[in-house]
Length: 92
Image: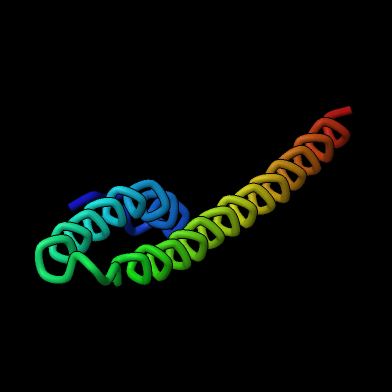
């Protein structure tokens, strides 16, 4: 088990990276089954369409998680700088 998977940002980014590979595997397997069971009707396009919608959703969640982490880091840095300036001012 990955110890970093407990961190929401890391788990979202990991999911965004691994989902396209899962998508390729599932769509490829469905295309293989579709080719040998009903070659005249290509229903695999709907599987690819649905997985594509899922991919967009996963990437949107990852971008949101990265944005929230960036805002939290910026706020933390601003607070750190404020306390550092306050400490320097009290020494003078």
